[in-house]
Length: 103
Image 1 (tube, rainbow, N blue to C red):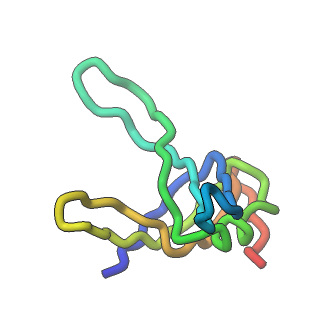
Image 2: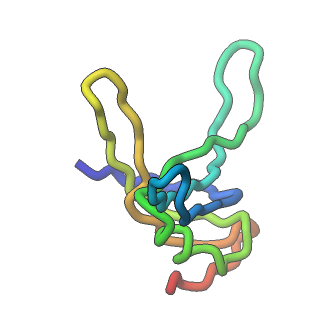
C-alpha cells in the first residue's frame, strides 16, 4: 500500500553504474524531519531511498529546497523493514514560489 506525504526536499543524489560486476540504479532524497525528545529542537535531514534513479532525474532541474508530495511504500525482508519512495511530485519552492513541473 502506497502512502502519500508532503515533505521538504533539501537535496537528492543518484547513481547508475556497475560495482563489482553488479549493475546498480539507485536514488536518494534528503528531507526535513522534526527532531523530538526532551533535549532536541528544530529539524534534521533524513535520507530516503528511492525506487531508482529515474525519480531523481525527474526532479534534478528544480531549485532546492522545495516542497513535494511523495509516495512511499513499506517493504520488508521478514526481519528488516524499510520505507522506499515510489513517486515525487514537486509542489512549490520552500520560499513559497511555484516549482516547475517535473518532466
